[in-house]
Image 1 (spheres, rainbow, N blue to C red):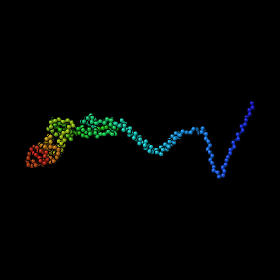
Image 2 (cartoon, rainbow, N blue to C red; image 1 turned 90 degrees about the horizontal axis):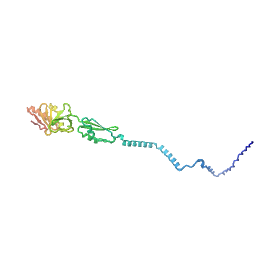
Image 3 (cartoon, rainbow, N blue to C red; image 1 turned 180 degrees about the vertical axis):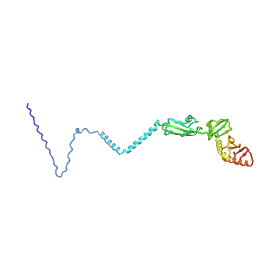
Image 4 (cartoon, helix red, strand yellow; image 1 turned 120 degrees about the vertical axis):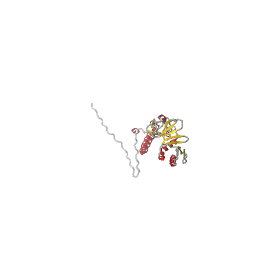
Amino acid sequence: MIRRHERHEPRPEPKRVVRRARKGAPVVAAAPPRTNAASVGRRQPRSLTAFRTASRQARVWVRRNWLPIAAAAVLLGVLAGAAWTWQSPLLRVREVEVVGAVTAREGDILDRVDFRDERMLTVSFREAERAIAGIPLLASVEIERQWPDTVRITVREREPWGSWEQAGLRYTIDREGYVLGHGTPPPHSTTIVSNESFSLQPGDRIDHHAVDAAAAINEKIERALGTRAVELTYSPDEGIRVRTADGQTALLGDSSGIAYKLAVWARVAEEATALNITYSTIDLRFGNRPVLR
């Protein structure tokens, strides 16, 4: 079978008419070619365009203001951490410990304070220290924080100074006259014998003027008179009475002017020896008007 191939003759291009502008006439730009809407897709919605524009502007603003933004973020982080710390149960008082209590009971100390549910950062110790200081056997108290959740109470108990005999019983006392109980006083300490008849309890305070007078007598009598005190007695009416190793007795009253009273006693003793005057008791309660008996 013989097939004939038909030749396709090229179609002649359409003739174009070119209009040339006359000399001196303004040149008019050709109109832009029409664009087929189907070839470029549908027109974008206005909302999407506005969103993209706002996002672009926001990125530009962030790049220009990154330092203040970072500082604000750090500040917010610090505030958030502080708020969490303030509300956190991890920084509340969980334990209270007592250090230094020997004679005083820990229970008596802990009964006077209440730190439950208190925050470690804001707990106040002033009222607690005042309450604990009311325990007579304690000389001082100090409260401090032990991080992260402990409050430590450090107490210093009163130290034995001498003895006080009353109503047939001997009590250990401290330098301020507080009764510490029936413990052993320090060796070679001062003993004061009272003529009062009632019993005492630990924490009671005797006449501190008597204790002050006894302490001053023991300290100054040997230098003033060349002797030592072997017995100190106390009476609410007479005050302190002292008996020396050479057999003399003196009524000194309260603790005021002990050094002056001893100086008067020494002067009277010199004059009595010179004048061959004997006496067993000298009353020095009236200062420069001693009375011999």
